[in-house]
Length: 446
DNA sequence: AGCACA
Image (cartoon, rainbow, N blue to C red):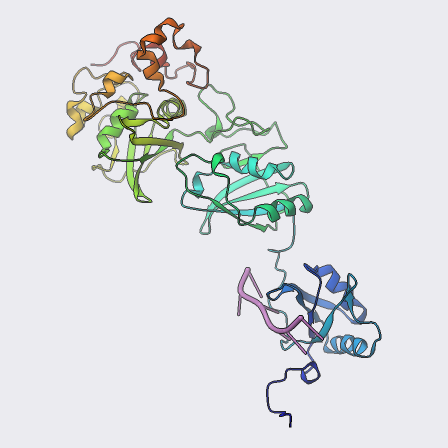
């Protein structure tokens, strides 16, 4: 009755192979257990575990066919079945002749994790947020971040593979909690595999790499803040990947935000060297380049979360760019290099706008001062001035300055150092604290 | 308990 012409379905009909197929394995059987099982019969040259939908199958490949035959023969006549952790394992010849591509480093557990951050804003995830997230599982020794075709990735080094495994198991496929991210950011999913690395090489503390084990490691220039202090701490406390280039995204852009508007807004804090605008994720973003980091820091601290126009319109979100020098190919309505037409102005010459073509010329065609940062000045904008953001993080320093109630307080000096950078040698005076216009120093240019 | 695409 039984036809012998059909595909072999029973183990007795499988032709011998040096690859054995195992089933009914315990959950997450390890390679070591498979090797132990096969070792009495010959040399195990390859294995693959966690095969199949239930992850309870595996393959063992012997160096020689006779070794596979020996194992099958033994258990075919043995009163004791093959077992792993006390669980009976069923063996048969595999219908494959070799195990393909098994255990190539990537899924061998190690102390270093390769983390891919997925999401539109993945590259805005700071190394500090990553540190915070992974520190929940144990001491994080080092983190490096980098950009690959796979996206924004990080290597996270733990003491040992056990700690790394617990972090991987808990975090793989999960999103970074939104409260750790800037509010406009979309979800960021973590994809985690083991890295083949065991010890990362971190030469500097910087916005893209950290060594939390070495307090004496030199700090990269890009990670030093305006007061010359470390913006990074080996304890991971106060950390900002500061840059002289700001990335601005504009939320709720009910009104057109032009290059000139941005230039005026950001010039309040110092000379703007370059601006590049572009569309991203259906919104508008811009990169604004200052000559130095401290100016960018002040601008970011002052403007973050605030709106260009009253009513919550055109809310600014600022982060530090990884750029340090923008490449402006052409001056147009989306990008401009303000240093080209008058190189001197980057340091001293405030009358930028008067030399620019375009509609903004009329705004500051006169005295050539950087616009003082006050509500009044901002009100010159088409519809409104700077408005406090409803429910925003804090009120604007410049509004505090013009607030009559504030005059009773001992001035802006009560504001913590976090609100603005203190004057540093050759740096930007805290204009919105003192009431002086920025760059109103000796010999204001006319 | 019955053959893998990472």
